[in-house]
Length: 112
Image (cartoon, rainbow, N blue to C red; front, side, top):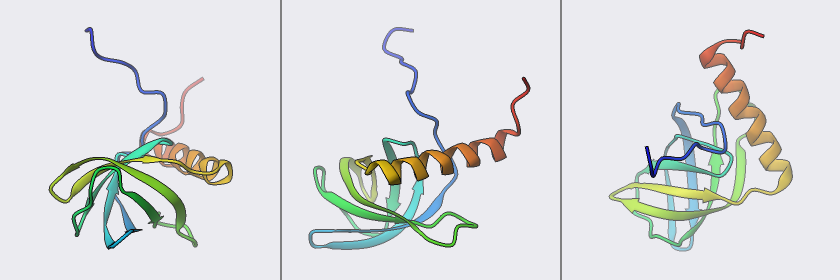
């Protein structure tokens, strides 16, 4: 299975609402396949590779949106695109907690 590597971070596969903003672009859509270091987004406007975006993620049950001030567009296919997240340590900690909680809810508690 050459060419296949294990992912370094847990991934949250459900879709959550997102708003994004960058130079000359404001949009919204659905964020999916979220990890600590990246995500894919299906948006309502076109973005370009290399563009830096600010994101607001709206997780169900959370009072405040998760704000990520730096997400760099890595690939674009129509209105779908992938971003690399550059979150500060405090946001990264919250993101790690959110992903872990969502993964546990989806798969149930682990058996030790």
